[in-house]
Structure formats: C-alpha cells, structure tokens
Length: 296
Image 1 (tube, rainbow, N blue to C red):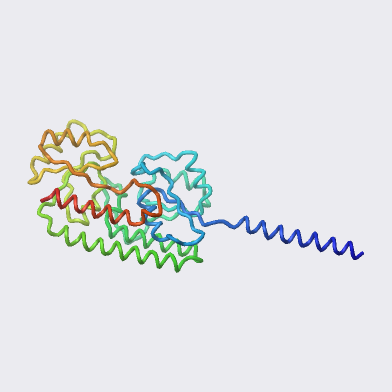
Image 2 (image 1 turned 90 degrees about the vertical axis):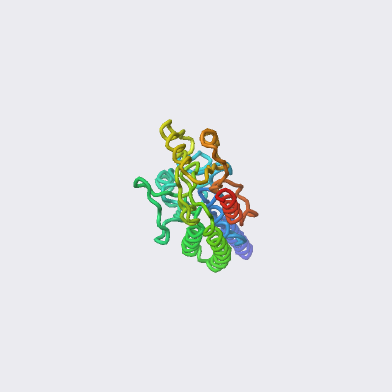
C-alpha cells in the first residue's frame, strides 16, 4: 500500500511540474508590429529597454509610403504572431481593411486617431503624412503611449517615462525649427510629391507646386507645362526631390527653368534597428538645413 501511495505521489509531482513547465513555455514577449518606419521610430522610443516587449517593423527598409503596398504572405505571418499593430492611419495603410477582416482579434493602434491631429484635406481626402510636422509626431507619440498603457498596464510607467523623454527631445526640435524657419527669406517650395504639406505648415512655407501627386505617376505634358510656368514665376527657383524616388521628372523641369535641385527626406525608409532611436530628429534637422540653404 505504501509503495502504491509513493508511486501516486511521484506521478502527481511529475504532473504538477509538467503543468508548471507548460505554463512557463506559454509565457511569451509582448510583440508589437509597426506598419512602416516613422511609426516604428515613435513606438521604439516609447518601448525602448522595456523587458519582454519586442517591436518589429512590418515593411522592408526600402519601402516608402504605403499607399499601394500589398501585404505578402510573410507579412501576414508576422501579423498573426503580433499582439498589437501600430499604424499611421488616415488612409496610409491601404491594406488595413484586409488585416481587420482576417485578424479580427489583433489589437490595432491608429496613431493619428486623436482630435489633437487636424488632417489637411485635399480633394476630400486627408493627407496622411502627418509625422512630417514635429508637433504632430509628438501627438502621435502621446496617442500611442495612451493606448499602450491601456493594453499593457504592467509596463505603463516605463512607457510613460520613455515617451516623456522623447517628447522633450521633439519639443526642443520643434522650437529650433520655429526660430530658424521664421527668418527664411523665401517661402515658396516645389516638391516631388504631395508628402510635405504638414512640414510646410510647420515651417510656414507655401507648397507652390507638386510634380507627381503620387510617386511613380508621371506628370502629364499639361501638368509639366503648368509646373514650369509656376517655377518661372518664383523669386527663387528650387525643386525638392526625395531620396526614395527617381528625380527624372524634376531634372526635366530643372533643365527647362534653370531651377536648382535639393533633396527633402520624408523619413519613410530606414533600418528598423534600436540604435536608430533619434533618426527622426536627426533627419528633420537635415531637412531644415536643406531648406535654409535652398531658400536664401
């Protein structure tokens, strides 16, 4: 009888240990997936160094704006293992309806879904490039923080501390931009595509013309003629291209007008690496320096 009881205790102990081990194996990190690079940078600055929290960017480093991006099977696999998906919103992620339909339990944070961000509406459609205003980027960070604290209260204090530190960094950047932009002698800019109305609003600039309203959509002969006419009427003839796209159309216009070509960065591409924490303020300062040089 004693042997039977001893055997039963051994079996029970083994079962309890096995169950406990199973529970430990089930425990996993909180996986946050971001839609593209600027949202990755904002989320990374909130979550940096928080134990058991992983941030993964969905799209490859070279992918720019997501207007026409098609999800790959690998993308869907990444989202299937995610706990939270952070997006820019305002129509940037054209694939979002598919994600909601196929992964109804995935928690989605829309960074721009806050009354503190007022979209610029063109032809009835909101322009989604809100992060190119530093003040709007701050608003996105605060909105992401609010949702993360609700979804993961265990790390709420750490999220808040890191977000406030990043907001301080961005506030200093915003102040510097405001002081410098206020004394720019010329305010009219011609941009490659319609990514910069928020930047122009913050820098107190006027987007006089846009070469391609959608990247990859060549301007018509009439649109080219109108852009050339507009540039010829400006006191300073400059065209701003983007590092992510071909400058062919801009070069054609420059040849016709004598305009100089400069490069503005919409900060949509980059390596999703933790060491890139301050990539956004660094590149925004480069944009400011470019504008100062071009608009003298």
